[in-house]
Image (tube, rainbow, N blue to C red; front, side, top):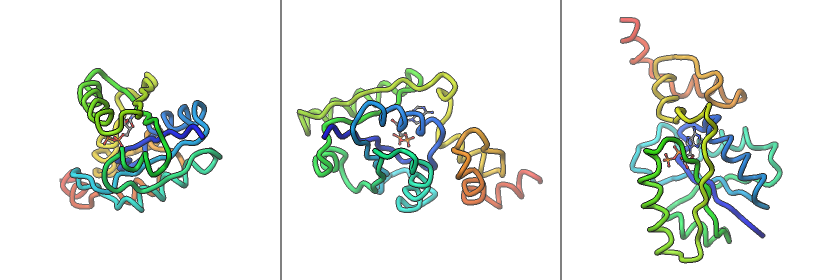
Length: 168
Ligand code: ADP
């Protein structure tokens, strides 16, 4: 089976990620969304919680599954029988680090290919960190995250202290 991995921190999943997952699911027989567990970035939610939110919004894709990923992407890919990783490319600034990661991954797993899908123009400025920033101040995340999780993101990512300070 032609399996692809869509990895990320998904803290939280955005409509930009959803677009990449949906487009990958049209290209590959199976897509595994891999939720990074060992992140230096100190995610707001645990990997299991982030995975649960992704399951909620990808349930309609029959060939998409969600897994928590511990350790290196190449090892996870081998375990899953995947030879392809699909990444979304936004502005040119994504390129440098993606290029480096792709080269390193090929050194560790020579048959492994990194495939890039260009972000939709309307998502090219969207990131999880922007969503976190907006939600932390109690701002509106409608249209930035899938509708089904809009309320929960609003609730889980709000920082009561930030809201209080903002109201001054
Ligand atoms: P990372 O920690 O690699 O930034 P993210 O969870 O932010 O992980 O993103 C996972 C993947 O989704 C990456 O390939 C990233 O380029 C892609 N991505 C993130 N936001 C968008 C977006 N708005 N449009 C398209 N792709 C995106």
